[in-house]
Length: 194
Image (cartoon, rainbow, N blue to C red; front, side, top):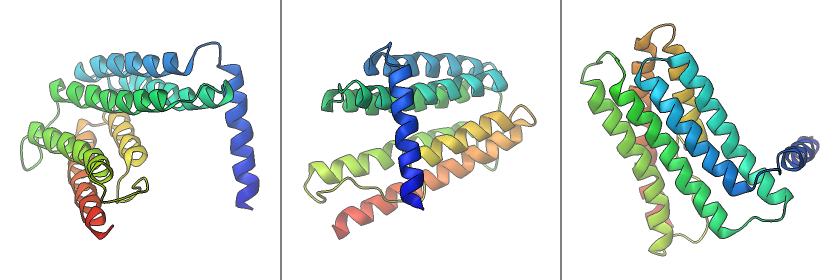
């Protein structure tokens, strides 16, 4: 049953790679950066619906780059590295945009929660990279309550809900702040377990 779904996904990825290979994979990665920056500008000015839509386009560009690289047989370590770096910049752009938007506080300043979220997101990534660099793990670490895809999905949902009421976005930022830091701690513990 799952193999049939996996094959369907593989076929869809090949189609996407073929249809969108008019640009290189690295060009799609660069476009995700551009759209991420534009989304951040809208978010900073409380244009939440437009910001969410452009953020979604940035995420789609990020998904397309890998499909194009695999289809065109141009996948490389350098491209994968560039993609990973671009992912972190896009998330930072959105967080920076939120820093300038008019969001209400919750228990503590919204700026504290945004910084705590940004730190948690950074540490989640760094805990994995450092564990591999220092030889504590050999395989890619996929561990923790909130990985990047879930984190960005929650962030997207929060930005979308802010169009209804900005408090929803504040609550999601608080949730992200807490869960990203829990994830970082889970990865640190996992690194020591080997």
